[in-house]
Amino acid sequence: MRKAVNTGADSQYRKMTETPVTKLIILLGIPTTISMLITNIYNMADTYFVSRLSLSAGGATSIVFGVMAILQAFGFMFGHGSGSNISRMLGSKHVEKASQYASTGFLWALFSGAFIMIIGLVFIEPLMRLLGSTDTILPFAVKYCTFILIAAPAMTGSCVLNNILRYEGKATLAMIGLTTGGILNIAFDPLFIFKFKMGISGAGLATALSQYISFGILLSMFLRKKTQSRLSVRFVAKEFKIIGDIVVTGLPSLARQGLNSVSTMALNMQAKLFGDAAIAAMGYVGRTSNLIFSVGLGIGQGFQPVSAFNYGAKKYSRVKKGTLFTLWFGVMLIGVISAGCFAFAPQIISLFRKEAEVMLIGSEALRIQCVFLLFLPVSVVVTMLFQSIGKNIPALVLSCLQSGLVFIPLCLILPKFWGIKGIELAQPLTFFIAAIISLPCMIVFLMRLPQDE
Figure 1: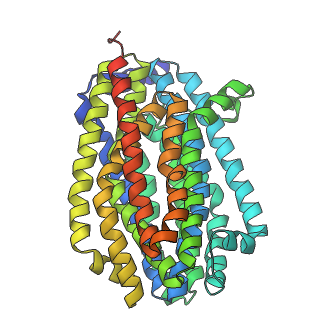
Figure 2: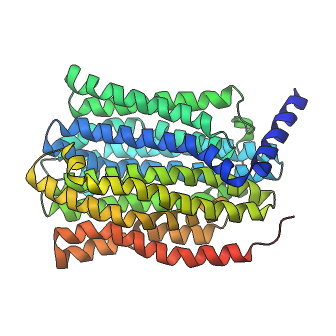
Figure 3: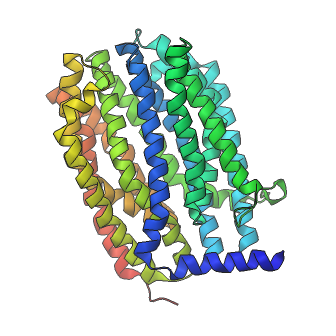
């Protein structure tokens, strides 16, 4: 048995360090891209079906998106924090150490999800108002968010399981779990909302059920020993160092997703001044932009295990080549998709609601986003690079710039001068500013990489 495990580990090591970099990134990126597309599609499906109920119900999905961002913040912190360390441990052939990072990150993710669930359910109405809910949106937001909070432990736990699989180079296994949950969510939505006449509660129940099913499938990959790292109570770290490594490495993800939640709150609070139509329209634009970006981000997440593994194996030329390939490939993919969305922006927004005000705000904001999305891969790829190799401080700083430190001031200031147009411009300008700051950081780092050992 030991010989079989060693043979599998050696085979995986050769795959990650000897397969041509561009081919390896695409091989790992395609399953991740499919997973992210399905995840974003079922988020859009929730928004689409709920929007059939009323304008205020559609606005509720924009409000609750802030809660989902909080859950993702903790899930990705423990997921990327443990995953990055696992990949480097496997790259340097420390398999048992990798299991310690896996088990510890998973357990803490479950605890954080359960804690958020309890606090959120107790203070659900104040939370919805804090995230920008109007009086008309509030009843829908409370009903929808209740089920999202019930699914909180599954969401945070799945983030860790998914990222461990990705960082081990098993992206296809992660794809199976995520896409199954996403497809079920899309199927459950119309069944619960319309067939069983549950309304917006049906959308929440569909999401909760699909999240727990997806969580079960991802967990089964570990129970069936499809991975090198193991999940076991005996591997949960008692010492602070491993927990500290996970948190510090995952801090950029926590900052990014946490600031996304604050940014969503700021956006909704500003849009609230212009009515429910503005909240709903900007929510539709955000979901569409996330769908576009998921293609480039999926390839980028295929790059993360490659960079982490090869950095741990001291094959620095592969890290450099992978970074440059991921950057231009991401820009190319997003450029093609953005061009199509720019051309059909009114038709895309009309899929959700057809009110004149929603159409006007949504179409204009989406077209501006499509132009500036070309800058987004720069900051994201650089942040992914630094996070995957353990350069935590620059990863944290760039992550914060991308997610909120630039956007929140712009979102609060620009509407004072340009009204709703200022809200539409805040996110695109953030993409541009973050790219201008990130690019020199990447160039300097790649120039200073040593020769391969």
